[in-house]
Length: 255
Image 1 (cartoon, rainbow, N blue to C red):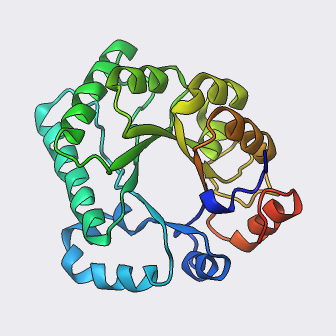
Image 2 (image 1 turned 90 degrees about the horizontal axis):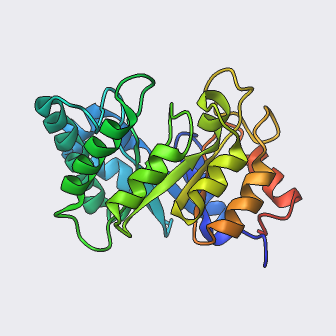
């Protein structure tokens, strides 16, 4: 099996040169403008600039809004706010013709008992996806999650082929209480997308691959084996070219 992930690779627009590099190397982009509430509130004024950035690129994912939003909230008024925000993301990506969106899990330590978190999350995501088209897919991303078990249970109880996990390697290195191999082998083919960046386990720093302590090579090999349809996104704040060359050097990207 070839290691080349070019046909599955995206650059996060977190980096200023992501669109330029994506056109240069003919890979995808993960649009992150929709993380910002003011963009959603005035999307009619911003969509033309976003579309201009997207020109000449043939595949996309998008990162949805996440600040202050908890899908598993007990309070029905809070859930309404989250639902409205996430639906605003859906309507925006529909206009942009993007069919895959990353949303954070919204899990925070010591907020709910695990069973309640899974049940509340199931209720929210089931409702959110109930009126979405068959070709619309979401990837629920680990952020502060301590381990993979709750997300594994959530994907299984949702039982919706349109819903997968976005595995964020940097978040695991900083926030998780279990190992990267445990995450990967527990989730297996529930993984649909991977955010690749590094840190020193002391903050979510989004460093390039060669810096920090995240074992990107292990993740690429293990995920390609157990989740062969997963896609990969370079989600570094800068030095995207450095991480591209890292992938080329180790045979994961053939340009």
